[in-house]
Length: 394
Image (tube, rainbow, N blue to C red; front, side, top):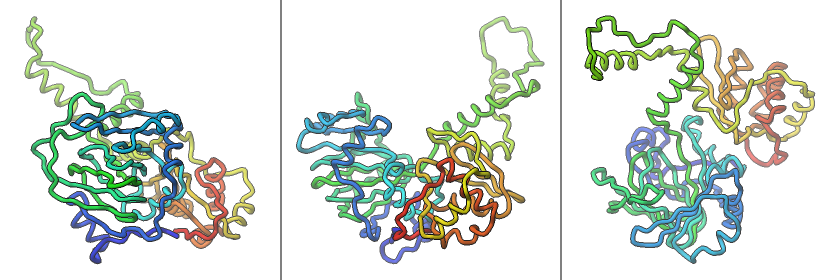
């Protein structure tokens, strides 16, 4: 069953976005219906031992003495841990645990390209990662156990503890406190100081939002311009009014010319759309082409859908699109394809949702081009079947 996020006190989605989103925190008791931990602590430790999965163990030794270890880990790394005051954090688990990928459907009021990943943590009693701030929105969902969250709006003193590979605040004074029980959630806007400590062994699911910095955006955009620039007439530094100057001084006129060059970096709107779509859907994998033709038997795929087999979007891929006047530009894993008509409509539907059944696809199953697109994306692994027909699709 699709999970639904329920805000407290009758707050609607629109009211949350208007009054809380990127403004102030919100405690959301009993936030999700039908939520149960999809994995045990032992399973989480096993995933932390996988080389291709990013994981950390953070140990609080007291008196601002913190230790961080990065994977890969083995069984011995966990058996030698103390009984309390440590946490293991494992990134990107929505790409490995189907239930966590489906958890993201509860956040369908947000642009899907803004959602980064689901990080899962297990904390031994009194475990935490120290007081800190995140520069992105985050929803903290409580699994087993309980966790005490303290919040502070302080901005003046953001000094960090020196000498450790962690961004932990040196000073923290709590202004608010919440105790989260299984199914409770806490929304935190960017830049809010927070500190979570387990009262007893617990699991926490952190849904983080993508928030690229200005320098990340500019750097990647300029990199793409550099890679794709084949114009021998591109603007270069010029100083036609140069006067005799035999010194090593960089003059104000030179600096002004450099500033103008930087400010006048080409900003073609269509190029920016193309670049950003590729940038925001980038993953460790990159497609060379988004296919719309297939060599598979389309009737067989159609039959499987009609008989109740669920079709899932590959959780390791990122999907997005940009609407234009006459067509739609589809972006998947940094690759792009321009579509129109019914194929654009079904492609957008796939970008908008994560799981599909015969009802949600019925409008397109009688269209040969749409069915062919479904098969083409299934053929290269962008879509995959599950035989669990008891779940509800979008």
